[in-house]
Amino acid sequence: MKKLAKGFVIAATAVATTWGVSALAGDFPDRPVGVAVSYGAGGATDFQARIVTMVAGNKDMLGQPVYIVNKPGAGGRVGWNWFATKAPKDGYTMSAYNVPHFIAQSIKGGVKYSTDSFEPIANWGADPAVVLVGKDSKFNTIKDLVEFAKANPGKLTLSGAGLFVGHHIAALQLQQSTGTKMAYIPTKGGGAAAMKAVIAGNVLAGINNLSDGYRAAKAGNVKILAVADLERNKEFLPDVPTLKESGYDVDNSSVNFRGLMVPKGTPQSAIDTLAAKVPAMFKHARVAKRMKAGGSPIKVMTRAEVQEMWKARQKALAGLLKGL
Image 1: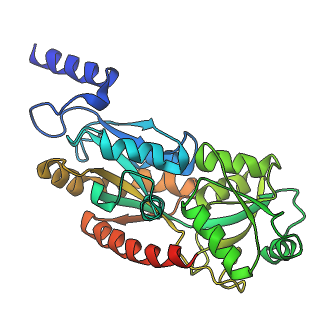
Image 2: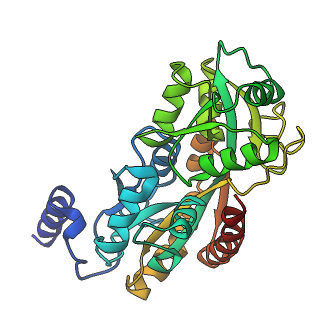
């Protein structure tokens, strides 16, 4: 009877308005855990969040399944505004974070969050930005694209996932380093929509995630011209040069760190439990295999390491965005 009652509570919690239900008594977690993704289904953050949480229900992990709720809009602003102001602070409601995205947006203003609004749990990946074009594009190298931009001010259209996300930062750095004027177009629907714009020929080029670009290139839909990082990605794109080695002053500020966080005010006991168990979940062999197959670079970081990374990125981005 006790098991039946507990099963009913879990089922009811999962299908009802789960985001507003307070934590239940008992060992934490004793019911499914939700993860809000501030981008649309099919994009890199959504794709990866579903993979890195796939073993959450294992007894040696969280012991409870994780489900994803997409809250896209305005380059992540919609989801993170909701998470900072309305999400339950019970440990059963996490969110995927994207850095530099939410930090850069908070620096520029007009949002209801900052690094002080959230508590990091753990980091699962570091996904560099890439410059790409459609498979039939006349641009075959990054120099071809830059030369066109120089000869045609404002006519090189670039799609990206939103304003002051990693894609936008890479575009601003590329524009500044080449002395050109490019038309960056933030698309509704995040990285997936930005990629579709490139494939459909609605824009001349795009800046997207390495993981999305890798899958699109493997399918024969795009050509990747350069990577916005300090070194080539030897695992997935060994033959693609970095923007820096191509002669453009673009560093790794746009690399997309992804992980999980909870709202500030979540009980410390819940934070500690999640921080202890989630990194192991990210390192699971099944997760690593699926991430590699999807061209998704893994970079597991503990809560303490993420806290340091957030601080460093906050300082670096404040200076970078002021200069741009």
